[in-house]
Image (cartoon, rainbow, N blue to C red; front, side, top):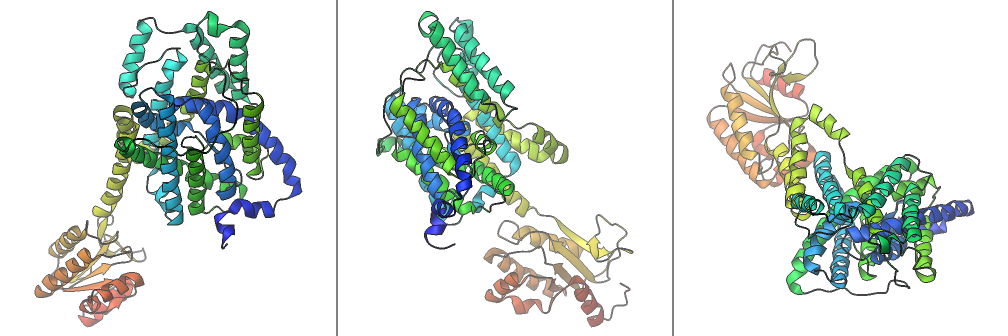
Length: 564
């Protein structure tokens, strides 16, 4: 695809639109609306901004993604996984001012959008794969716990000054013991939560809508907001979101930039996984780089129209799919329906209790937890399980932003460790098995007199160059016979840098002075080309296409009598 078809996949789908899809998209859009409204309001409150801005963050972004997004049924909007990240930045910077909170959150959305667009344009969509599954589990479990704890005061009908997940638990306990809990609000909230969780298994039943509507009717019918002090949403302002450029003081801009980048990381990690999942299910290929552009455009639109950062939704997308969605027209219909509500009936949800909104967020946070796969990881790879736990503890104890920084740091350390301390082997011939194999795994393997076959299972780069040097010399020193030649099986070596190239030159010289030849077998062409640029290729003599050819050449050149 070239030109506008690449950058605006929504228009391409519109040109190919089939009339038979229209009834499905219209119905799915109306069904989706029943979730967009309560979820949008709930996640806005959880993010530290007034509920109306959750609807603003739903309308324009859905239309933007319909134009720029490559996935046919992915639904974007306010998300529970981002709420804790947004709140961690909004709460300290807003100082209780709702309009300043909106400005901070909107600016975070713009930063997140620009980062995602940059990733997509530079075709860096692969970076979503750099966080291993255990690390993703760790930070998502930490975020889920943070979100859950942040909603407990609202569920219990009181408020606290947030001071981090663990300290918040202490304050919540103190507030309950001090008699601050509103048990009527709690009963409504816990009832809403139970209905959502009980009906969740049936996708075609709008359990969330049923629970929220029931809670709203109960509070409105019995006047519980006045008689029992149950906090409610109140009337929403009438009208649509307007274009606005958010701005805050330069002193706070650094924190917003860090928060926006953190939001982008969480959003594009979640979106890439969900996008690939539904691409496989719908048998429609999705370009991950265009997915980042679509996500970025939606966030940019949210930030410019009084919204806050958004992501793909693992709860609303299945609803759209189950309702029969065929294209992104479903999201457009949902956006228009939300806009119609704001224009025609903004007071419809004025009796919606805050504890019910907290229940919506808590139900979503519960869905973020991952335990079963972590048990599997503990069984098969304990160190990765504890890596996940370290990431989880970092988010839970230090907060979301530092915790995500820890997640990124752990991912980099994990990546470097695998390359820094790779597997290596001295190989021999095992009777009855073709090829040459690690003598540690096969102690009975036969060695070729005077020849060491050495395999290095990683690229050669600055972090492992010295280790390679040491291990080669160790292999030569530990040989049971005087060594004439060491041949490196270089098929796993996919790259080489200047540091390791200089190391090879020094190694070749020191081995040659000791009467040992350094040779390579199975070296890949790109690595050969690099060695040629480094003026090293000729120093290593013949480059053998296979280990077998290297052994045959050695036996012939040194007249060694050895039976393969």
